[in-house]
Each structure stands twice: as structure tokens, then as C-alpha cells.
Length: 252
Image (cartoon, rainbow, N blue to C red; front, side, top):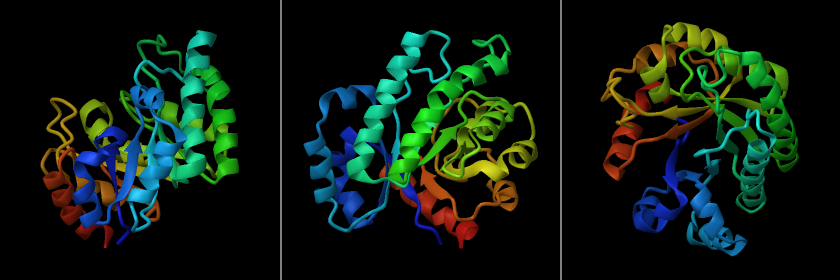
């Protein structure tokens, strides 16, 4: 069974350090913009030193207010500044992958996917080039997408083995307007990471696997890249353990 990563904000690690070390967890660490403004390279070195069992890492980049496909060049510049800071951290932390949000909302772009794609490439091409040089994969996550075509277009245009999709089960369950089979037939060639959590379609609840309405049985039957990075996004120690136990039947 692949050993999943567990999502945790950087500033919450001290709160859960005993649980993390006891269970020898691999971590996906979320760096918010607020955290990026406060930390130094010494803080990253200290974090690695405190986790003496040599876990694997991945990173979740900041996303609030950022827009990698922005029409406004200054907004895109600010987004790139945040993304490059995360890449700076990657030089020390050496994560397997960095998860970014796509920033795509169909109504904001007046259903003009091509316009979003054109501006997005100005961000993702240099980000992926630098990440590739560091040996770090880029995984763009579905958020408000109600169908997968824009993410597939982006992956096709970047056309890099280093660049792919982070498929988020909870977001798909909440926002999708098309069947799960359509998502998987479209994105399967590009999925390099999974975010695994559940909800009952009323909000982004981040429930443990199997406690909402997402069809994990069907999903894992359709999912092809068994060697991808698996990340649990349940927001309490108890729910992390529940998810890890329930995933065993799918990942064995």
C-alpha cells in the first residue's frame, strides 16, 4: 500500500507534532500567504530537523486571492511572487510535488476557457520549468470546476511529464455537473496526485473517506495511476486515522 500524505497547515504542525511523529506521517504542508510572510529559511530547516523519521513531503501552495490565469498583469505578478516563494522553500524541503489551485471559475471568465488558458500558460510554463529543475512535480487541483475540460486543456498545452492534475474527490463531489466517469476518462492520463476526503454535497466538509456521498468504490475502479501521490484531507487526527484505515481496501 502506498503510504499516504496527510494535509496540514504549517502553523498547525506544533499542535499535532506528537501525533505526527507517533504515526510517522508523510505530510502535505500548506503554506498560506500569511505564513509565507512570517517564516524564514531557518524555520524550514528546523521543521525538517524536528521530524527525525525522514518523512516524505509535498506542499500545498497559497491560493487565497491569487489568480494564475489573471487578466491583470499585476495580479499575475503577485501570484508568481507567492509561487516562487514556495519553490524557494522546495529547495530545502525537497517535496515530491506541489499542489496549486487552477484559479478557473467559468463565470468570472465569461465561459471563455481559451482566454483563461492563454494567461495561465504565462504562469505555469515558468513555474513548471523551475520546479522540473528542482525535481518537484506540479499538480493543479480541481476546485470550482464543474467539468474537467479546462484542466485537461492546461495539461495538454503544458505537455510535460513533470506537470499534471491533483484530483480532489471532495471538490468533484460538491461541484461536478457531469458523471465521475467523464472526469476520469478525461483526466486519467494526467492525474499525479489525489486529495481524498468526502462530503454530503452541501459544503466542503472534509469528512473522512466513506462518510459522505462520493463513490470511492467507482472512483478507484476507474483510477489508473496507482503510483500517484495519495493525500488525506481530513481535518482531525481521528478522521485521518479513519481515512487511512478505509483506504487500505482500495490501495492494497
